[in-house]
Image (cartoon, rainbow, N blue to C red; front, side, top):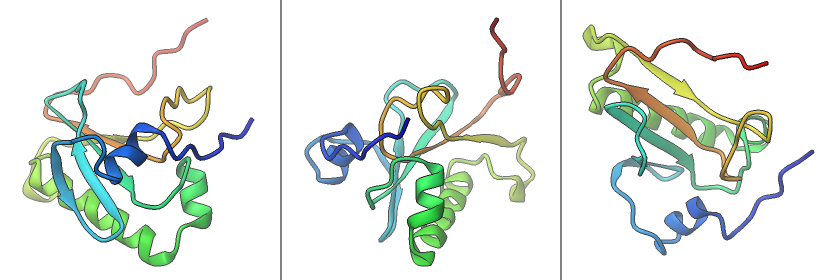
Length: 127
């Protein structure tokens, strides 16, 4: 089952300036902003400005400049939010969800950068 890109998804509206956000960092190809329902003391979403649905879509179809710019913005967010390992910090988790089994809610690729506390187990399995 493939997700089609929806121009009316909440992140597309944020990128168009129709919905406000709490910006953490931005460059030519990506935007980082605070999650409105944070699950950790640091919970920032990083989204590409291009129309990509998921990590695999972005990785396969984005330009080299988009991929590099997105990755650099993620590093900037980690440093800015004090969770990056380069300064001896305890660490963070980077999560992206894809499709129904991955519990993706918004059909626009986004990476969650979460930290500021022990994040617990990676996945809790359910029967």
